[in-house]
Length: 296
Image (tube, rainbow, N blue to C red; front, side, top):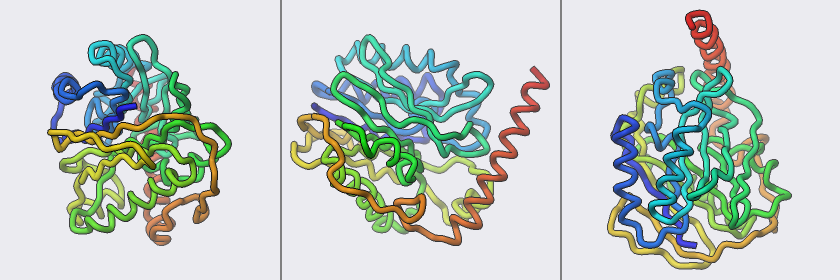
């Protein structure tokens, strides 16, 4: 299968404009088997309630667009987007071809002030096999591993909207390599890490303030991790390609976690900053949802 990951420019705004931009990249691909886009590809990554204005309605528009692109360019496509369903907003990812949407994954540990959180599934059953999808932070968490550890998997996709300190380039690359190689080694299937590039939008909470102070940006680092196959030479720096046979594999080795985290990270950050931000974010989300219902 000819796999392509598109590293999108987060600074391009507007759904119509981004759809044109994404199609301009897809149209230049040679015989794509599957095209994989980052987290929130349709609207650009953002972590505030400003994102709600870009929400789809029960995946209808995104599904139609994805199938249109798949039909026009004879490919499967994976796309990240914001969705509104049954009174809640979700950070989602779907995979489609010209006739079907084969599955929709919701981010379990979403941006707490913006999206509904929960313990959601991680597998999309595509014609070429099971695709395990973990959106951004979910890829580092035990919940994702628990969802897939006993399944036969053909492909693992990590769509990201991941900001980092641009002054710590080597550290970001090491972390990504450890994350993706861990899953490639455990399952023996390609792992696609696809992120965006560009400035980071406003993020609420203590974590957002720290990121702003450190001048975090979206640094891309998109990469296809695979044992075998060959890289596809692409003329655009926004496109990463790899040609490899796809088949289902069972897990061949265990993955070690630090509690609930694959990446050991900073205990103080997780315990006192992230935990606080999640609690405060959930409270803000519920408050805003209640206000929206009252005003509707």
